[in-house]
Amino acid sequence: MRFISPNFSDFAEPNIEFKTFPDGDSYVRIPDIKKEDSILLHRLYPEQNTAIFQAVLMLDTLKRAEAPTTLVSPYLPYSRQDKVFREGEAKSAEIACNLLADAGAKKLVTIDCHFLKKEGTFTYGKLEIENISANKLLIEHARKKAGEVEVISPDAGAKYLVEGVGGKSMEKKRGEYEEGDEAYRKIESLKRDFEVKGKNILILDDMISTGGTMIRAVENVKKGGAEKVYCAATHGFFLKESLKKLKEVSDGVFVTDSIPSDASEVSIKPLIEKYL
Ligand code: R5P
Image (cartoon, rainbow, N blue to C red; front, top):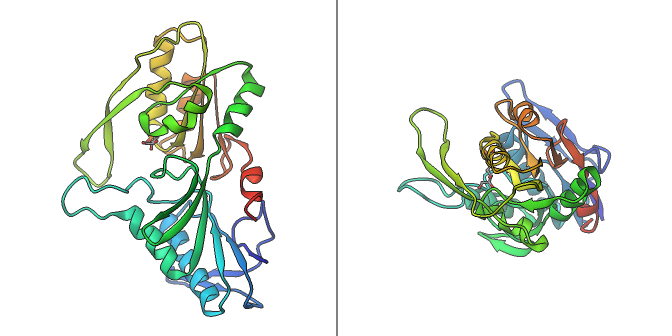
């Protein structure tokens, strides 16, 4: 088994040639390429468009060398565009998966893939996906940090992360896309039909992107009389200064190192290691 890793130095020494041409095109070379089972460890975020294309270049190079390759990428970009809401929209999640499969990925090992909403082995488009959840590690970490906490999710999509510990879910509704260049659907409402008064709460989601969901959820449970409120997610992008804002409104915020950041307090190593 050979490990190929350009940007996963927390798991394996970077061991391929990765450069950028003066015009921005990606250059990839896998030294000593051999016909052997391989694992490609490649983070697909940040700069996801470039990172996905680099993955395609590496996978195809390995395919030509007849090296069956499993791709390990903790966060799968485009996983939130798995449905077509308006006529003419791209089905981006499926396109991304098909690209990786066509390039030669025998399987993708990933964590809390947004459209799968449970752990297990799935086929999506042409790609076989092993989806692992970081929920247990995140809940364990919260309990070490803050003692007993009740775990809830901010929307139905993240229900699977909390139901194993009897957690309840809030209900979130988004509006239509707004005018302008940013493809963003504002949160219209976020409701809760259970009590949080006097409790210590952990709000758990698969990702914190702009922080809009998590900030609304923290404000909601604080208003409901919760004692301490912590927020956690598998993937933390923390766009629009949302880490700073979340630190201000909550009693603590943490994520895994699937996307390394200042809030990465939980290592994904124990999750990924089983599959290596
Ligand atoms: C959506 O369904 C996801 O589970 C997250 O709640 C969402 O993507 C977080 O995005 P944002 O931080 O921009 O609200």
